[in-house]
Each structure stands twice: as structure tokens, then as C-alpha cells.
Length: 243
Image (cartoon, rainbow, N blue to C red; front, side, top):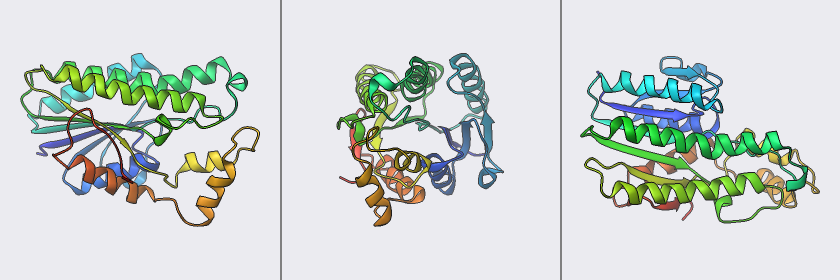
């Protein structure tokens, strides 16, 4: 019976898949919540669900936590990884629906799952940790990234607030916000497909790809794991793998 469990959103692709594989190598049982599955994780627990449907996400996540708790685990980790750029363009060219979807996936979902995680495990005396995959965009305003930058900034703030609230908990959760750097994922491909009117810095991103300056999902996952494993990092810290 595995005593360590990882719950991760968006574990089937990109950084999420890299993280799932990295934690698997460390002996964690993986529970991935995503719209798609991955053959590489065929032996793991891949749960297909629409995370932007918060009711569905709540029910699915709660049932999974109950199943894990029934196994008397020693450690449970939640990684809020799933995210979207939303519409890359000036804010006035964003539809109401695209704004709503991006904010929901990037912010509402991590907050909701974190709330459920803390509530369901508040009386559990075991190691409990949360990693929010954020971005340097949280502190750098990029032209055309209004929803992405804003939602990631909010993720950093909610990380800090939760850490402060957990200071008085009987069995506190450590929560971190980590910037994984510039990673060669589908999101990067999407960025490079835009034009300069939508995204002023497109040339910089194209150049980074051409000069092989992007990290692979596996490299980014290794860097995130090393920060997670660093016990000196205090709850509420916001850190960048490149620093």
C-alpha cells in the first residue's frame, strides 16, 4: 500500500505530466484530474473531468480524497497546475466567456480545490502540502495577457493568505507558489502563433525557442520538485526555479 499520494490538475500534458512522472519516481501514487488521459500514466489514476465545471470538480475531488484517506496515508500533496493563457490580445478584444473561463481555471479552481483539501484533511495528522504552479507573469505585466497575468497574481496572493490562515491550524498545510520558468509546452506554441498586434513580445518568445532556451517539461518538473523537497522553504513563499 502506497503511503504517499499526489493529486494534480492537468497531469496529462506539459509541466503537469512532467510533475506526475517526477513524483511517481519518488514513490507517490498519482491522481491526475484533466480533460484528457496519457498513455505514459496508464498505470496511474487518471480521472477525466471538466475542471471549469466547479460542481463536477468538487464532487470528483472530494470522492478521491475520501478514497485516499481510507488508506491511512502518511502524506498527501496537491499540485494546482492546470491553467490557460486565455485570449492573447488586448483586453477589449477578449470575450466575456473567454475571460470567465480563464479566471475560473487559473484561479477559481485552485482556490476551490485548496479549500476542499484543507477542510477534508483538517483533522488528519499527516504531511500535507500544496504547490500552486504560478508564473513570472504574476509580477510582470505582459501586453495581451490581461487575464493570465491577473489570475497568476491572484494565485500568489491567495497562497500567502492561506499560509497565514494555516498558522493557527492544529495540523497545518504548507503551501507554496512556484514559477516553473519558460517551458516548451503547448502553451508556448500557442504564444508563438499570435501576431505582434496581439502580443508585443512575440519575437522574444520565438527567439527563445530558436535558441533552445526553453526548459523541457521534465527539466521544469525536476526544478519544481527540488524546491518542494526543500524543507527550509516556509509556507506562503513565492519562488522561481530560476532564482
